[in-house]
Image 1 (cartoon, rainbow, N blue to C red):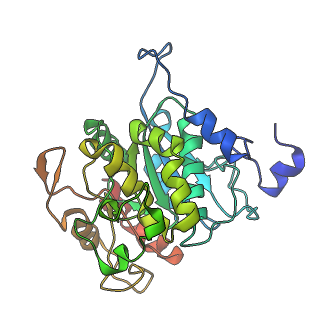
Image 2 (image 1 turned 90 degrees about the vertical axis):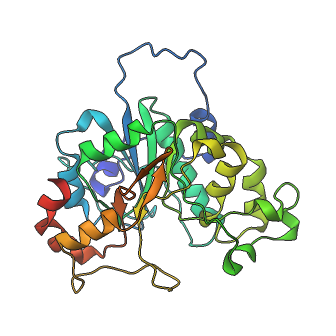
Length: 308
């Protein structure tokens, strides 16, 4: 149980397993009996990888309201961040034991696996959604819930179909074995995974060791390589998170001076056509990023479009 000092400092945690090896070991256990011995409502696990606060929390609060039995929330933030969420917030007490994350290093994969392992401890979680503090939902909760569970046997891991110079140069000869050059894949960090892929990610040591010892910018490659290695038939090869790059190293940041409007939301929703689960559709994105902290006012003003 958290001490009074921990509660007052905002460090109340969802669980207290600080050792990553123990956490991954516990989370990687798979029941051998397919029938559940309890009433089970499939849930979506929303895993927020953040630096500190959740500035868009008011929008997410609206999104989650009324669906408390169908979602779980997990937050990985800087270990020194202590600002507590209000006790009536869906984010209160949802932080997991966290460690410092540095962009482009193995610590990013460690944080993602820490989030995933924490979510896998709950057998009711069916899909595992990786998000940042700059992400928003593009539809109401019921639409996203139904969308992901209709495609229940699919993960949504975007994979670039061709080698890019900036991507393939990150492969190192020392990675072979086991990782050969032709197995090198790249894609967006923000993925949606099913339980089957999640177990492989948590139990993997072979490829993880390669990235730990020789890799760089792993968050754009690790999950992509594992899904293609183990479960290509269970992947949509598509990212559900809308992002605008415009040829820059970092995605476009949408802030108070941006034209954040109902028309922009519609553009994000239906910008592309894609094939999901063998079905052609124009509903290709259900999340979007990258929204600046101060964009929350504009987002709340168009919440009726987002959640209507």
